[in-house]
Length: 491
Image 1 (tube, rainbow, N blue to C red):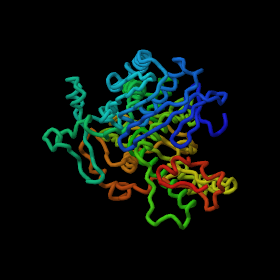
Image 2 (cartoon, one colour; image 1 turned 30 degrees about the vertical axis):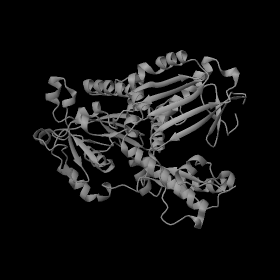
Image 3 (cartoon, rainbow, N blue to C red; image 1 turned 45 degrees about the horizontal axis):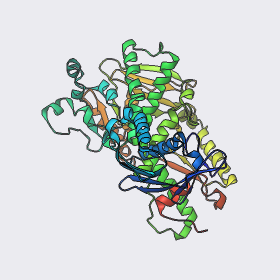
Image 4 (spheres, rainbow, N blue to C red; image 1 turned 90 degrees about the vertical axis):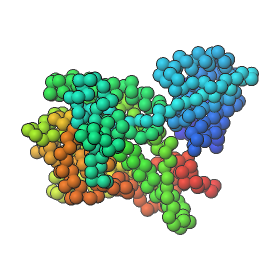
């Protein structure tokens, strides 16, 4: 298919023209047109089907299109979806919806209105999951301050953890009760945000990675080793590590900042002196959420071009252990990154990342492209594919998983340095089974910038060369550009 055609579903492709989505088969023959109305403020989506080619009114073809529309509403966290003029009988649609979604979503996805007139009109209600955790509760329970108590009762909801806030410089309590002062807040009450993930993403992770992670960690706890893990178990372990790295609020804030910087740079280049002072780019939450969820899946899905699991399976695996009274902590950004090799090479005047960036800028200038985004803040050595990268993932107060690109003369960080980086790379909260956390305040005092990282999470690499029209939207879609800045291009 030509570049303007995008994949709609397994069998169909589409072109978007204003509010209309024109669907085609693989031979570019028209299948139907869809008029889209998306109320982003109320998260309501509606489609009107027009110009349906009679050759495609058989149930499998119609259902493939309807199913794609349902998925679009789920991915965009909509609460309501209406589809009008479906060339299908009511009873057939009800059966297909039940088969596809009843088991997964139960009453969170249901038909609330359906009418045959003679084409079918249907309205779906989607109950998005309100409280969604961006750190798995099962993982945090490994650091519980009252593990011996809730383990005996078997009531996981009683599990508690100490939470230190970098902003208030204190141990937090939610209700200031005696039990909170003794053991900290409930794990079920922290590391969450309303509607942080879409329903479809929540259901997916609940049935895959959130099931796998406790099982693989429990095996490591039992044998106190990762040497006996099978290749398949190591693959699951790497997927869980990446998932935990990419899942938190901090990861989403990096995406927001990089996109807003990129969009503003593009606008400034295009509009030049016409852009009003104080103009800000805003990457709206619905698209940001979709972008974040897609990024997570891109890195762990084997069929994705960004799949990185196989690359990390070639790394060195180590299980680091705390000694004596010392212990590991974790945070609202549990997986930390380091690159001792790069820092050593930089001191030896071999800044290979800087050289690569200069080479990249030259290529951009020669090709006339717009921008390239780096989401690794002011630490480009922490890119996931950068030579020498190290991953540290504390899994209990006694154990920390280390996966690193082994280089000559480079060893994993000490426990103290790991704890220091956990504090620095956290978003706001540090979690611990112990309330003896005076060392946190000492680290923050020496590194006050770690409290507020706004504006420092990403850098955007580009050139000042005028952008030819044919390249203007190579790295930034026209839809994104117009939608979130409110500008249109004059023909």
